Length: 598
Image 1 (cartoon, rainbow, N blue to C red):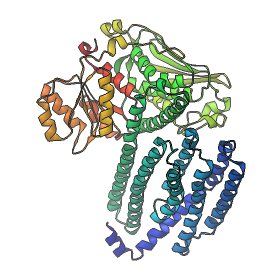
Image 2 (image 1 turned 60 degrees about the vertical axis):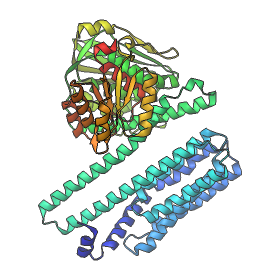
Image 3 (image 1 turned 45 degrees about the vertical axis):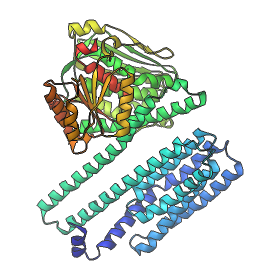
Image 4 (image 1 turned 180 degrees about the vertical axis):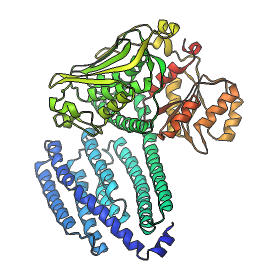
């Protein structure tokens, strides 16, 4: 039902929309009052030592006045009374607070200190994204909220351009663009949802129509979430690759520390994305696989993914394993380990983290032990609940509070058992007993892999099975990617790693012409969304051209669960953005035919 039809059926449609928007924003404004009070208070310990006390006191006094004013203005609003008058009160309440935050650029930020600059930039972007969720349904209110926040920042950049550390404001502008884009999508989705609700209220007796409309609304919501997720994952993938290509050893000490902080923040974001992806997979009801896999290879994958994170915190990281194979779903097992390890690294400041694989009564058993803060005994019965975060370690938490919940769900899915032992100030031990039978494995691969213990810390990581898997000389790698910067990043990295890289066009006509000069490929790396055609189309065409089922992997930001079965059916592996380039390379190496590995 379009807007003209709605206006014909509801003569006061515009008034209804305006009232509903006011109610939504008013409710959000009330619920965020506590955050509005606490956020300025948190700035005091952050900037007290680096900012003139008179200035910070003046700023805090201004903030106190506008926050109190905001409280009374919002309290005065009657959503059932005159909409325009109350909307003006709300806009004034929003704009005055963000204006004082905007003034903070000139009070708190020292352009000579990139870390100081970055912290206030993060605060500003957090305010922007939180406000986007609550106020983008009304562009007028969103403008009142955003302009007082961003214009002072722009003025600050203009007046200090010669001292600015430019990657930070450029990143801010990119984030601002993404926020506006998401705000537009969210606003459109909200109006569609509201219009649909009016229609359902008016046609409650037409049950079939209501059902179809609800399905349409759910599809629209899923498409919106998928689009927003894709748009965020795509630039995150580029960031991951470019960061991985930076040699931190050549940076000065201070820049190295800033770079380490940046990598840690990126790791947190990656973990959040992967957490949401894990939930999506679990909710989709995908059945566990039952294949034979190498524990040594799994240990190596953990080595690649977590050694740098441990080094940045000066933690010793050890992976102990026997020369064994297991039969089950290695991806689910890896999800469990990644969530446990990310938690362990996050809550361990000094000492060590140990992963140990063993067999008990012919079944695979493994554990993750850390020397971190430990878990209070009172919290142990509830740590696997969704969104639970212990008060004891809340200040150290950067995540969604879902990691252990995901671990518990996967353990139940594979029919295993998880036990926890923890002592405050000593550390924690998570032990998983699976039903995966331990096997002797393929004799040839077993002889190649061998049995090793990988130890990380101050020393360089040992190469677990590099001799078998990581010889890239003579490997023809085809890359299909429509993002220019990401395609070039892949090309630079894999060419430097010794691969013969072929950048395959994603335009169908250019693709057909390019086939004539393309040598036989040993591996295909592709995105999924490639314009008119998707990655599956081009992979299948290449396999047909060479009359061989070339190993292929789709690296995608599209997390739709329905695609998993399709990829599996066509024997196409899938990795989800954001993912570090070393993990992609390790995946390619272990997927190559034996003649290409050696």
